[in-house]
Image (cartoon, rainbow, N blue to C red; front, side, top):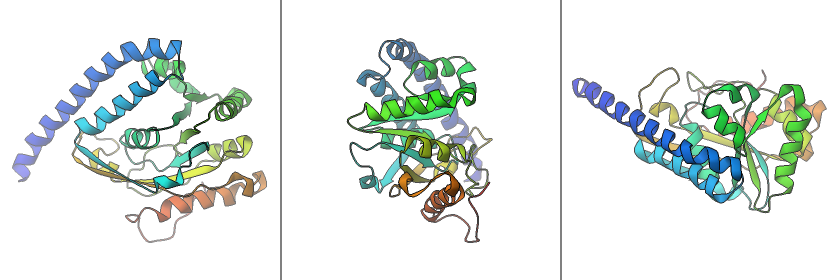
Length: 254
């Protein structure tokens, strides 16, 4: 079986990368002008949904959502999820962006990346500029206030993908944003994506993803003097939803 695995893995991975590259380029040609004209339009959202659906479907990935009843229509959240693989992004976007406005929060530096950065800059997604945090906070507040269906702003608080599957300490930035905007945090645990495509590898293998949506953590219960407690609470909620984590005690403090 090991002899047959390598040719299968190579052919399958090449197919996935080639198909995704062709779709991404073709979709970008219509997405960028559409986002420039109406970044909040349903057409732009449909393009994004189709793109992530194709990634999952084309890679033969099964996706199971748990606890989706914790996402209440009309409420806005800051979504925090663990990060094990590039497949976390399409899994989250497909599940949580189905019937609501889903916006990703990224670093301002990513806007310099050709094509991807240009599309991000024109879209409704938000790049945090550390030199002008007030502007970023105002953008989050305005989006939440103007949405009847609710908005989900997604942050990966570990800052990078996990190599060994462990849950790394959470960075403080997302918790400052939650307190500054008054938006509750929606903890989300993702399991299985590291089996599809590990950090530092280019193989794309079939498999399944489980996404566990936990009850929201209300920001009204915390202020900036309780930031460490706030961060530990969300970290623990996500850790407890990941049954494949090692049993030894860990901490969410950086």
